[in-house]
Image (cartoon, rainbow, N blue to C red; front, side):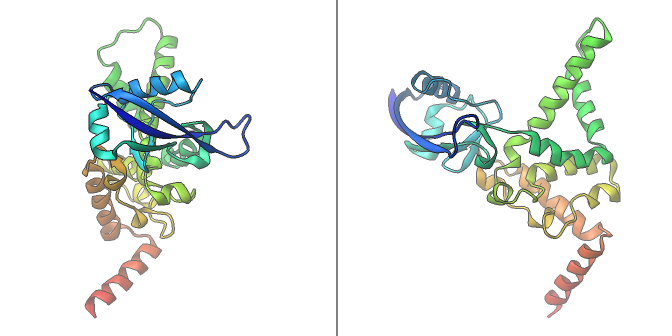
Length: 250
């Protein structure tokens, strides 16, 4: 069975366009086809329409599983889809965004164990693989490290605050910190997210902005928020905690 979907496609090419715009396109899709199939159909009608593996937004909600069936997507979004990149401010070509700001932001975590976390992922992937020569291993290792870090990109720009405030650390940053803290439990790791202006106390619900919805990320971030509130020695956090406790006492 086929269903017509009316699309509003975000269009922008940093090489030729001054401002982004939206192009309308109506297509009929078999309900058992996937999101990836839909993107292939879009490219048939819109030459060289740009997207990559890190996902995009449909009606303001992040979708990053391209194997999702059209039937599932229509049940959630209806048949009117506004398709945008994860962060329009970082658009390079249609749905493709510049990943450098995200990678630069998480550079802050290298001094508290990010490379080790990524290396653990590499070892997990490569443990059954055999390589002939160190050079080949190095190339593959770096590739897997990059893929691991960029797999957090859909969570980096899911919430409105993470898109509109470039200084805000973001939910992806908090998830990585939670993973690091689970391994090492050091004050230095907690300190990376203690900014009152842009830190974890400003975290927004990821579940609200993801499809399919999954509350495990919010549970993780909420637990980390509690740990920061209870254990952080940061003076600003302590002052904030004191004020909150005084209000509760009244």
